Image 1 (cartoon, rainbow, N blue to C red):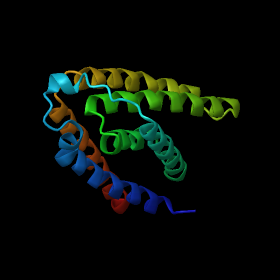
Image 2 (image 1 turned 120 degrees about the horizontal axis):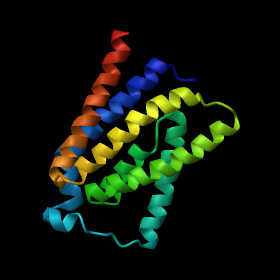
Image 3 (image 1 turned 90 degrees about the vertical axis):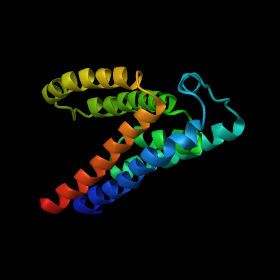
Length: 169
C-alpha cells in the first residue's frame, strides 16, 4: 500500500547510514584490536542468549523482507555485524549462506506457481554467478578493514543511487 517511490527512497535512506556505519565504525565494533589473522579465525560461542537474539532478529528481518521486498541477507549481515559482533568475513559468509537457503525456498514457491521466466533467469544468472564468485574471491583476500570499507562504500552508493533515481525519474 506504500507507493513505490516512497519504498525505494525509504530503503535508500536506510542504506546510507548503514553503509557509513560499516565504513566508519563497524570494524572497530566487531574485531576491535584483533590482528586480521586472528579475526578471520574467530568462531563465536553460541549461547542460549545469542540463539534467542538470532531467532528474534531473524523473524524481524523476515517481516521487513516481506514489507520491503528485499533479500534478508543484508539485514542478517547487519545483525551479525552489529548485534552479535561477528568479524566481517564471518558475517559476509554467513549472510551469503542464509541468502542461498532463502533464495532456494523462494524459488520453489515461484516454480510451483509457474511465476519464473526461465530465459531471463538463465541470462541473468550466468554473470551473477561469475561476479559473485569473483567478489567472494576478492573478499577472502582483503583485510577486515578493507572489506568493511568496500561494503560500506557499496551500501552508501547504492542508497544514494536509489534515492537519486527516484527523484530524477
